[in-house]
Amino acid sequence: MRYNRLSFEIGSFLSAILLLSFSSYLIGKPAEKLNVIIVFTDDQGYQDLGCFGSPDIRTPRIDRMAMEGMRLTSFYSANPVCSASRAALLTGCYPKRVLAGKTVLFPRDNVGLNPKETTIADLFQEDGYATACVGKWHLGEEKQSLPINQGFDEWHVGILQTTDGVLYPDGMRRSGFSEAAIAKSQTAIWESEPGKDVLKKVRPYDLEYRRYIEGDIAQASAKYIKEQAKEENPFFLYVGWSHVHYPALPHPDFEGKS
Image (tube, rainbow, N blue to C red; front, side, top):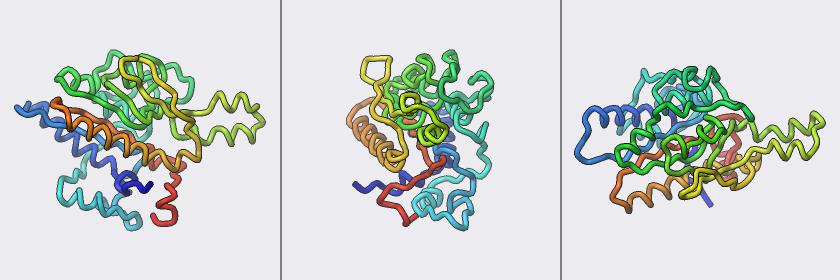
């Protein structure tokens, strides 16, 4: 199955645009509630897009979006890395304040997003929105820190930890760890279940699946949008891509082409 190249190219600049729209929404409180989608890439730099001056990376679809929409040249993330940038995006707070001083959460860290904080999703829920998270979370594995306990009704193609986890098995084998220990450390993809506050493990998140996960995130996001379009209630969707975090392995359809 071929996946839209847009799923591999959407930049975090779009998050800035959508957040600006969200801010205007809160200030203006329009009579008609708008659907809001925030798209957030992982480890993408400012100049990794054609419309932001990259001489090497071609992003024609994003360049067109920038030309037809709005391009913000002074939008800053509160932190340049995984967990901290997401915590700031979702809460509007300094990440050290809401992540107990952490910048990147690692497996078996017993901290996560402070459950007492108010997220964007919480605000939308309070205003009658359906809310969903698709893709990377990386804000804690403790029950109170999961997206379904941080304002999201549902979560799909869920990545709890860093994408570094797909490299753990090979590294552990080279270091002489037992296969039992390696299996125990294997990262996974998770899904929420309707009416439950626990997650279901869907499949391992390994190097082979690394090539396909962006397509699954794109499909799950599109499916949610289509489902919500049939409903009368407005929705908020937060899409957390896993690329371009290392290892940025291409889908077979795009290998050698981008």
